Length: 259
Image (cartoon, rainbow, N blue to C red; front, side):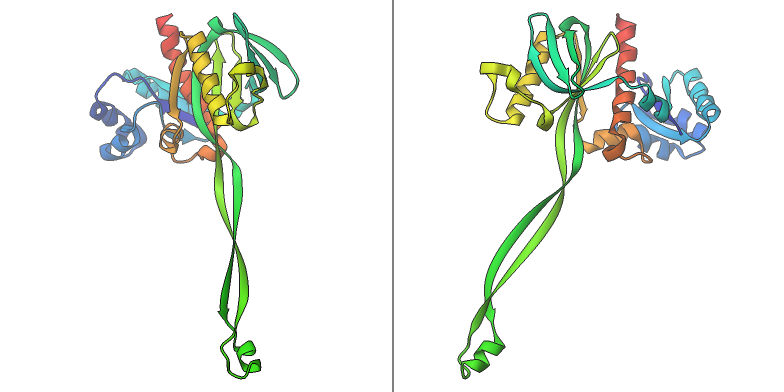
């Protein structure tokens, strides 16, 4: 599968929709619906690479910047490092990954800070209640005197577990992933807060202070933003890594233009 994603267009939404509609053989109204939420937005997917590239070429010729993404290739080539432990150095961020690798990442090398909410599976909450209800058997045994018995019930409610994650991209090609509830915050020392959420907020705040040149984006914090970028065929719960890939590539296009 190959994804075709449009981004960074300068024209009015109606003009862009009028270009996309005939290229996808859909109504202009449908094309407008695809792109009204902002960019980047995945507008199509194809089984064949040449089909994706043909569509991208048409849109590019109409001055609509387009990305073609191969999800399998993105996943094969990823250089993601899941961070387990970190400390703030004077010039660099010292990190240890879950595979016990040690890195020192200079603050000046940080390009992008992308914040998102990710799914971590399903959680269960059980609620037990005890009630007294009329018992016909006990009442008969008591000679007609109304009697009750205890009835205990347990209800299990399932809910999707969510967590915040921060992906940091460097200009040397590394991608560092900080996930709120799996990080050790011991490296904060006296700055350590009372809860994981507070510690994670402090981490983000400090990185933004120490690397002011890094572009910050939080549109992946909500599901609407995730669906907008991925399109209707992909699931944010399983394909969020592709949303990061699309958003980071789109943003880096501007970074390279301005550098």
